[in-house]
Image (cartoon, rainbow, N blue to C red):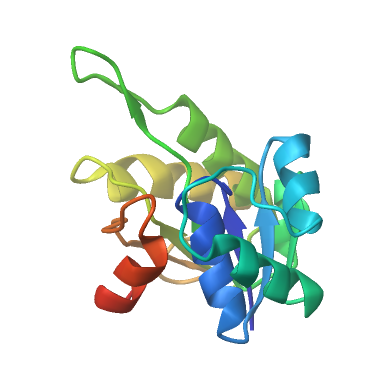
Length: 171
């Protein structure tokens, strides 16, 4: 099995590293070429995550993780797509779905029968079912529950202690 992780930020990259460290090949996707280059060189693109550098270098060196800016290729090459794209909220509490909607539209044409899509971002209740599933179905031409599967798995981890939280709160 292979997994793609879309969004290699402070939650997505440690999650990708954790999965790769468990023996599952991971293709990480991010919109930033600089982030992708740093990750492929074994260098964390941000400070503050305990043991990330050592773990990242191990999984890059063993070729269990690689990063790309080509989200479609990453998803097409895997059976599981995990989206860890932020949902930003303004000062009035209004969510800005543009980034996660864009990522959803990007992955939809690359889905194949049997694919599993997991949203690992904190979302308002019903967002996965009522917003993302229709986008995925429209973009893939397939039907959720019959041709592919979608789940929501809230983050439940905090930046700076992601590896400890992943051990404490199994996915």
